[in-house]
Image 1 (cartoon, rainbow, N blue to C red):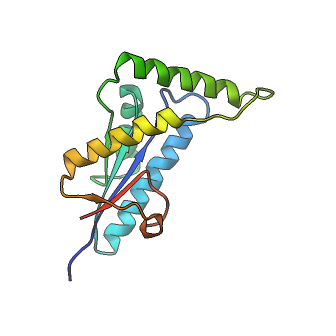
Image 2: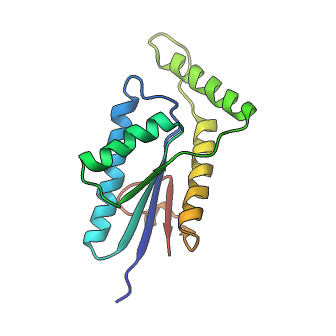
Length: 153
Protein backbone atom coordinates (compact mmCIF):
# COMPACT_ATOMS: atom_id res chain seq x y z
CA UNK A 1 0.00 0.00 0.00
CA UNK A 2 1.36 3.40 -0.99
CA UNK A 3 1.34 6.02 1.71
CA UNK A 4 -0.08 9.39 0.74
CA UNK A 5 2.06 12.46 1.37
CA UNK A 6 0.24 15.54 2.66
CA UNK A 7 1.74 19.01 2.96
CA UNK A 8 -0.30 21.50 4.98
CA UNK A 9 0.49 25.18 5.33
CA UNK A 10 -0.73 28.28 7.09
CA UNK A 11 0.48 31.85 6.60
CA UNK A 12 -0.08 34.45 9.29
CA UNK A 13 0.45 38.08 8.27
CA UNK A 14 0.44 39.67 11.74
CA UNK A 15 3.42 41.86 12.52
CA UNK A 16 3.04 41.48 16.31
CA UNK A 17 1.20 39.34 18.83
CA UNK A 18 -0.65 42.10 20.66
CA UNK A 19 -4.19 41.57 21.88
CA UNK A 20 -5.80 38.36 20.71
CA UNK A 21 -3.24 37.68 17.96
CA UNK A 22 -0.97 35.56 20.18
CA UNK A 23 -3.69 33.12 21.31
CA UNK A 24 -5.07 32.94 17.75
CA UNK A 25 -1.65 32.06 16.38
CA UNK A 26 -1.19 29.43 19.08
CA UNK A 27 -4.55 27.90 18.17
CA UNK A 28 -3.58 27.82 14.48
CA UNK A 29 -0.27 26.20 15.45
CA UNK A 30 -2.15 23.53 17.39
CA UNK A 31 -4.61 22.92 14.56
CA UNK A 32 -1.74 22.39 12.15
CA UNK A 33 0.14 20.05 14.51
CA UNK A 34 -3.03 18.09 15.28
CA UNK A 35 -3.87 17.64 11.58
CA UNK A 36 -0.35 16.41 10.81
CA UNK A 37 -0.41 14.00 13.75
CA UNK A 38 -3.85 12.75 12.69
CA UNK A 39 -2.69 12.07 9.13
CA UNK A 40 0.43 10.32 10.39
CA UNK A 41 -1.66 8.17 12.73
CA UNK A 42 -3.56 6.96 9.64
CA UNK A 43 -0.25 5.80 8.20
CA UNK A 44 0.31 8.68 5.78
CA UNK A 45 3.27 11.03 5.62
CA UNK A 46 2.40 14.59 6.60
CA UNK A 47 4.27 17.80 7.31
CA UNK A 48 3.03 21.21 8.39
CA UNK A 49 4.45 24.61 7.48
CA UNK A 50 3.69 27.78 9.39
CA UNK A 51 4.87 31.05 7.90
CA UNK A 52 4.94 34.09 10.18
CA UNK A 53 6.13 37.59 9.32
CA UNK A 54 8.71 38.45 12.02
CA UNK A 55 11.58 36.79 13.85
CA UNK A 56 10.00 37.57 17.24
CA UNK A 57 6.80 35.77 16.22
CA UNK A 58 8.82 32.84 14.87
CA UNK A 59 10.67 32.53 18.18
CA UNK A 60 7.39 32.48 20.09
CA UNK A 61 5.87 29.87 17.78
CA UNK A 62 9.00 27.71 17.93
CA UNK A 63 8.70 27.68 21.74
CA UNK A 64 5.42 25.83 21.34
CA UNK A 65 7.12 22.88 19.60
CA UNK A 66 8.51 21.68 22.92
CA UNK A 67 5.56 22.83 25.00
CA UNK A 68 3.14 20.74 22.92
CA UNK A 69 5.56 17.95 22.00
CA UNK A 70 5.10 18.71 18.31
CA UNK A 71 8.43 17.12 17.31
CA UNK A 72 9.04 17.21 13.57
CA UNK A 73 5.41 17.82 12.61
CA UNK A 74 5.92 21.47 11.74
CA UNK A 75 8.39 23.86 10.13
CA UNK A 76 8.10 27.48 11.26
CA UNK A 77 9.78 30.15 9.20
CA UNK A 78 9.69 33.77 8.09
CA UNK A 79 9.84 35.16 4.55
CA UNK A 80 12.83 37.04 3.18
CA UNK A 81 12.68 40.77 3.93
CA UNK A 82 10.05 42.59 1.89
CA UNK A 83 11.01 45.43 -0.43
CA UNK A 84 10.51 48.75 1.42
CA UNK A 85 7.39 49.69 -0.56
CA UNK A 86 5.67 46.38 0.20
CA UNK A 87 6.72 46.53 3.87
CA UNK A 88 5.27 50.04 4.16
CA UNK A 89 2.05 48.96 2.45
CA UNK A 90 1.72 45.94 4.77
CA UNK A 91 2.30 48.10 7.84
CA UNK A 92 -0.28 50.61 6.59
CA UNK A 93 -2.79 47.80 6.02
CA UNK A 94 -2.22 46.51 9.55
CA UNK A 95 -2.63 50.00 10.98
CA UNK A 96 -5.91 50.50 9.08
CA UNK A 97 -7.14 47.13 10.29
CA UNK A 98 -6.28 47.91 13.90
CA UNK A 99 -8.44 51.02 13.59
CA UNK A 100 -11.30 49.07 12.03
CA UNK A 101 -11.41 46.70 14.99
CA UNK A 102 -11.97 49.45 17.54
CA UNK A 103 -15.60 50.00 18.55
CA UNK A 104 -17.25 52.80 16.62
CA UNK A 105 -14.76 52.77 13.77
CA UNK A 106 -16.10 52.53 10.23
CA UNK A 107 -15.32 49.61 7.98
CA UNK A 108 -14.15 46.08 8.47
CA UNK A 109 -10.62 44.81 8.79
CA UNK A 110 -9.37 43.60 5.40
CA UNK A 111 -5.97 41.94 5.02
CA UNK A 112 -5.78 41.39 1.27
CA UNK A 113 -2.14 42.41 0.93
CA UNK A 114 -1.03 40.52 4.03
CA UNK A 115 -2.84 37.42 2.84
CA UNK A 116 -1.27 37.63 -0.62
CA UNK A 117 2.26 38.29 0.67
CA UNK A 118 2.00 35.58 3.31
CA UNK A 119 0.55 32.92 1.04
CA UNK A 120 3.05 33.67 -1.75
CA UNK A 121 5.94 33.36 0.72
CA UNK A 122 4.40 30.16 2.14
CA UNK A 123 4.30 28.58 -1.33
CA UNK A 124 7.96 29.49 -1.90
CA UNK A 125 8.92 28.03 1.48
CA UNK A 126 7.12 24.78 0.75
CA UNK A 127 8.62 24.57 -2.75
CA UNK A 128 12.06 24.92 -1.15
CA UNK A 129 11.52 22.03 1.30
CA UNK A 130 9.12 19.94 -0.78
CA UNK A 131 10.04 20.45 -4.47
CA UNK A 132 7.99 17.46 -5.62
CA UNK A 133 4.71 18.64 -4.04
CA UNK A 134 1.81 19.72 -6.21
CA UNK A 135 -0.73 22.11 -4.77
CA UNK A 136 -4.34 20.95 -4.54
CA UNK A 137 -6.79 23.79 -5.14
CA UNK A 138 -10.00 21.78 -4.68
CA UNK A 139 -10.94 22.59 -1.07
CA UNK A 140 -13.21 19.54 -0.83
CA UNK A 141 -10.02 17.42 -1.03
CA UNK A 142 -8.40 19.21 1.93
CA UNK A 143 -7.97 17.11 5.06
CA UNK A 144 -9.86 18.45 8.08
CA UNK A 145 -10.06 22.22 7.43
CA UNK A 146 -9.34 24.85 4.78
CA UNK A 147 -5.59 25.43 4.66
CA UNK A 148 -3.72 28.35 3.09
CA UNK A 149 -1.77 25.63 1.28
CA UNK A 150 -2.54 21.99 0.76
CA UNK A 151 -0.43 19.77 -1.43
CA UNK A 152 0.21 16.13 -2.19
CA UNK A 153 3.02 14.13 -3.69
